[in-house]
Structure formats: structure tokens, C-alpha cells
Length: 234
Image (cartoon, rainbow, N blue to C red):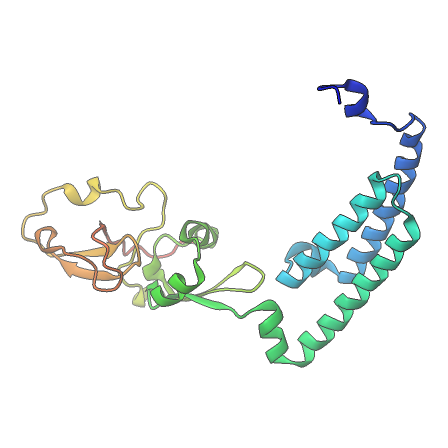
């Protein structure tokens, strides 16, 4: 086989007329996928659960094979689409009627923030990338964890947040990028004055002097930052 054979790269052994067939196959598979997404509904397009992601991946594989493979017949692909839709309908029925089945298929919401700090055990078990979750919080105008009473990571990847009222906001870990764990922030000599410091790893917040900061009792990290206690501005 010749390396960098332009003819092989562009069409392999297929005639140029095969492009017309590709156009037809692509159009038909597009219509099939579009009809499937209409059956799934708007939520399936905007906020897909794990089940819907799997269905879309399987559907995309079947559609791609039919669209581009000259030896892939279309009728079996249509049957495959019908089976996929039927399986999806059966699964969604059991998800609606059985909470146990729903937990198995889609999982459960995960408590990520509790009383102004990370729910550390949950975060460790689920390997949640806190930087991504912080982005979700910032999109809700949150500057630090002390503004948050409870925050859940939902099964569709979105964050549900319950706030403290202004009078109950407590010192917390800043999640603004230019403040996040900037070690210069605590290298300044604050004398013997006690300040609120937050653990950069788990958000545990303590009142201490800079000289007395030790490893965090929750996560054993020794990285601290001055806490923020600003009120939430929408």
C-alpha cells in the first residue's frame, strides 16, 4: 500500500458517484436522528442524563456507519434505530416508576457543599473536579463558599444551590480565580491578629493567626488562604 495515496485517502476504491449515495444516506440518517431527538424531548437535548448520553452515542455510531459505509445496508440500521428508541422508552418508564431503578441508571444528586464548606467525604468518593463545580457556582454569582448553605451536583451535571441569607453569610473559601489559593495573600505579616483562613483543598475555615496555621484537620492539606465574607450580589 502506497503511503499518502491521495486517491485512497479521498475515496479509497469507491467511484465518484458514491458521493451521491453518501448524500442520500446522510440525509436519511439525519432525519432518523432528528425524529429520535424529537421523541426524547427538549430536556434530552439541553440537559442529558447518563442514560440519554449512552443512547445518543449508540445512535450516532449507527448513523455514522450507515452514512459512510458503502456495504452498510439501511434497513438493519432503521431496525437498530427502532430498537434504540424502544429500549429508551422502556428504561424511562422504569425510571419514572421505580426510584431504585432510577438510582441505578441515573445515579443520585451528590451533596458537594454543606454549611459553607465542601462535603469532603462525598467529594473524595465521587472524584468531582472542584474547578468545574466552582465555575457552576460563579455562574450563580457566588464569590465564596461561605455564601452557600447547601449545593448539590445533579444527575444531569447542573448545580442546585441553597444560599444563606445575608445576615448568616459566614467566612468561606474564595472561588474567584484571581483569589483562589494565592499564597502571597497569606504571606503578608498580619501580626498576632487572628483572621479567618480557609483550606484551599476542602474549604474548612478556622480562625487563627498566620503563625499558628497547621495542616487542615479535615483533609490534611497545609495550603490556606484568607477567607472572604462578602455578601452575594446578584
